[in-house]
Length: 288
Image (tube, rainbow, N blue to C red; front, side):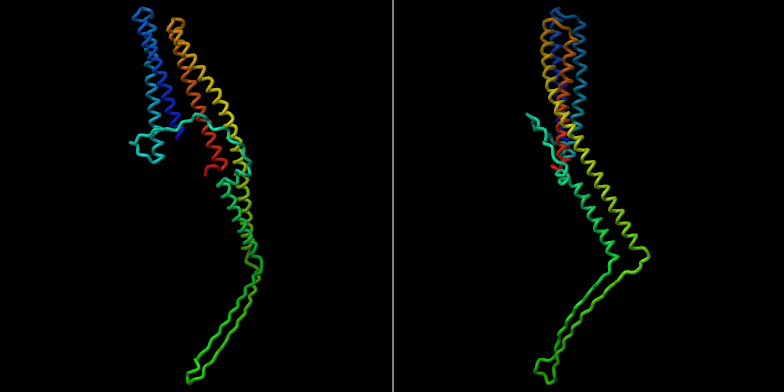
C-alpha cells in the first residue's frame, strides 16, 4: 500500500511536469505570435495541448488522494491528518539469493500447520489400532492404622492392609466399530498427506513464478531507466529546435508525451520489482 501511494504520487509529479512544459511552450508560442513569428494555428494548438493536460493532472491527483485515504484507513491514521511519504530509494534492493525449497518450507507457518495436522492424524490412527490390543491395568494400595495412645484404660490396637489387583481386558467383538474407526483414521491420514503434497507443489510453483517476475522486473527497470533518460533528452532537443523554428509544435507535444510514458513506465517497473521482492520475502518465510 505504501509503494502504491508512492506510485500514485509519482504519476501526479510526472503529469504536473508535462503540464508545466506545455504551459511554457504555450507562453513561448504566444510571445512568437505577438512578434509575428508564429501563426494563430500554432498558438491555438499550443493552448489546446496545455489545457488538455490539466484534467489529466486533476484526475491523477484525485486517484492519489483516494489511495492515500485507503492507506490511512489501513494504518489507523485519522483521515484529517496529513501524511508525507518520506521513504526514498536511491538504489533498489539487489536480487534476493535463491533459497532451497526445504529451508523455505521449514520457515512457512502455513506448511508447518499442515505438518502438525498430519501428525495429529497419525496419532488418531495409532489410537484406533490400539483398540484391538488387550489392556492390562493394575492397582496397589496399602493402609496402616492404629487406636489408643497407651494411657487409655481400654486396650488399643493396630492394623495394616495390603491390596494388589490386576485386570486384563481382551476385546472380542464390538460390531465393526473398531474397524470403522481405523478406516476413518486411514482416510484422514491420506487426506492430510494429499494436502501436504499439494501445498508443497503450490509453494514450489510460487517460488518459480516469483523468481521469474523478479528477473523480468529487474530487466524492465534497467530498460525503463534508459528509455526515460533518452526521452528527457528528446524533450530538451525538441524544445530548443522549436524555439529556433526547426520543428513544429506537434513534434514537441509528441516528445512530451513520450517522456510522460517513459517516466511512468520507469516508476511502474520499480513498483513491480519491489512488489516481487516483498512477495519473495513472504513466500520464503522471511516475513511472518
